[in-house]
Amino acid sequence: MSNSANSDPELPNWTPLTRLAFRFAFCYFILYAFCCGNATVWEMVPRFGGTIEIWMAKPFWRTAQWLGPRFFHLQGVSAKLHMSGSGDRPLDWIALGILFSVSVIATLIWTALDRKRTEYRALHRWLRFALRLALAYAMLYYGLPKLLPQQMPPPSLAVLNEPVGNTSPMTMLWTLIGLSPVYEMICGAVEVCGGFLLIFRRTALLGALLTALSMSNVVLYNFCFDVSVKQYAAHLLLMALVLLAPDIGPLLNFLLHRPTSPHRIEMAPGTRLGRRIEALCIAVLLVLGVGGLILRYGEIYAQEQANLRNPPAITGQWHIDTAEFAANGTSTTQPYIAGDGLPITDIFFEPTGRANLRATDRVLWRARTRYDDAKRTLWMVWVGQGDVLYDVHWSDTSHLVLSPAAGGAKNGYTLHLTRIPLPQHYPLLDRGSHLVNEWPFER
View (cartoon, rainbow, N blue to C red):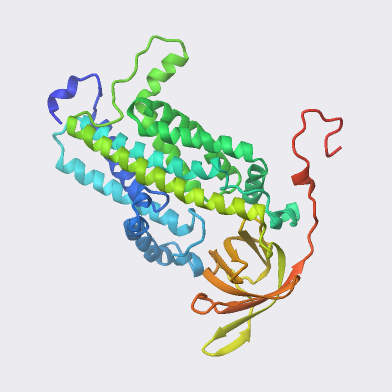
């Protein structure tokens, strides 16, 4: 990085403020891309990726957990690190503030030690390349399960049999999108296209533009319908805007029919060694990242389709009559407790293999299940109780008992369940779309 490049039109006007902003942007986005703990590129590393991701994020989460009760008066479950399915927990926002503070401190130290530097042309290219890969993986991570589709499943039995007024805004949004698989697949296709276009240098600008448009819609969904991924979605949009920033001027001139030319900043390192590193990183992303995601989501899709063709016998709504908790050789009747401490009253086993558990406050807890009819076992995982394996004992078609399988259950609950009869048809599912309507359905 030579100082003689000051006059290069590729990056004009590197003022002290521009250099300071770049140093902060570099520190902040590199830290966030590798340490945010949500769909980072570490996940593509076989076997160890999840562990690396947790360890990279742990310094910020641990510090947030220490600061939470002492300075932000957090109490109870909010003061402890726990699985919740939300990316907007109080500790997440505190951790983001810590990451921001670390970036500011790193920027100040960098500025003090590198006062003579007048431009960061090469480092700017590396930053844009890193953001391209991180953003591409995130778009593929969220786009592929929509393309199949499976992120937003069809309306669940739990939602179909719950008064509309009792559902949350996010549940209504998920139900609305899942009601139309074609719409969900189109949304997924846009995200997947944006992700693939970001990977390659010549199409990266188009990918960044498509990603920014797609993520703008996602951010609106998340903030307007209280989807608990606001922090992460906003950062993905911000990353796309950072990639677009140098080209905003030429793009506006083009849209306003003014004379313009493409910006000369490349989306990747410009040296021969840099291009080799670029090619290697792209190959890793395509083979491990994209290949791994296709295998993962493809397996889930195949299993769900098999379940839909032959719904498990356990499918339906089941009321928990009694729950017995066994510990230290004794068994006592106790409520089956959700993650927030309230009892679970009903379990809805969906034909896809998913499940919803309804608590006394009518809140639905999402779960995944795998029922083995031959072995009479049920595996279930949800954020309230974690990974559980049950033996299934049928009294008759309307009564069953779920008891802890030997060495498989961690919570010790034995559940006595009664099937609740459900309607055979629902207008929400049967209505479909009509090109010609004599009357609207609600007249």
